[in-house]
Length: 329
Ligand code: ATP
Ligand code: MG
Image 1: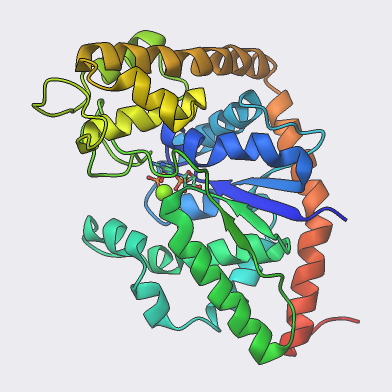
Image 2: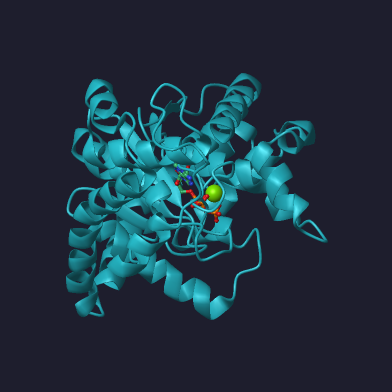
């Protein structure tokens, strides 16, 4: 039996090159080596307020984008989290074995709650729901960006605690990070991770952004006052541009060094823009083809949910029995 891969992305906005290089590129690449399940995690998205109409349309846009980057629905299940209620059901059971202190320590919780006047409980519970997503399918491998490493570690702690309290129930999941591009930074502020939910037109490059807009954003990205690329010790903005280029082109380090050492920033930016567009334009063309048939994406999502539901039910049954909750059999 093949090991299972699971990963998710929130429909909180349009997916960007950080999502692509940190996670989605890997999803497509490793899907055939495993039994793969990829989730559009709408229950995670509502941990911060989402406009309902917008959320619905983002779910479809995201599903279309995932298909366009090469997620093959004949092989991998593409699922919307809320269409499998067992995610929320298992999350409650896991909530009851998770100390609040573990959750309060999470970097993402601290960063995302900082901007809120009143902090919703969902924001604190976020990593428990994420643990449920993973443990529900007994996933062994979780390909994510670096920002999710801490949540993955927590998912393992939760699984371990459950297993030691109630007996072996869950497979222990491993984190899979890309070697280059695990943390792409904002183009406007290279100290901050590129995020869907961060405002600002110059912040993120959307996978569906118009080519001209992509060029402009890269040409205007923050660098520093050095005359050209200091390859030994580039500033944060230049390092980020080099990482974006390398992750898109899959060049080895020595080729990067030879090619970019001393290059003027204007030239660097032009080359980064062309490297991004060479990958992103074909994705956009496939996106247009896929979404031309209005019923297709909905059908894929329905099939995905139907495929994974028996797996989800099996794990919930197992967890309920382990805890002594009521089951009919
Ligand atoms: P949000 O701002 O709503 O949290 P996001 O851009 O952080 O959106 P998520 O849906 O939270 O995106 O994450 C989806 C996947 O993309 C995760 O695996 C995450 O680790 C990865 N990811 C997110 N941002 C980056 C980034 N800047 N660089 C690399 N990977 C990233
Ligand atoms: Mg995020």
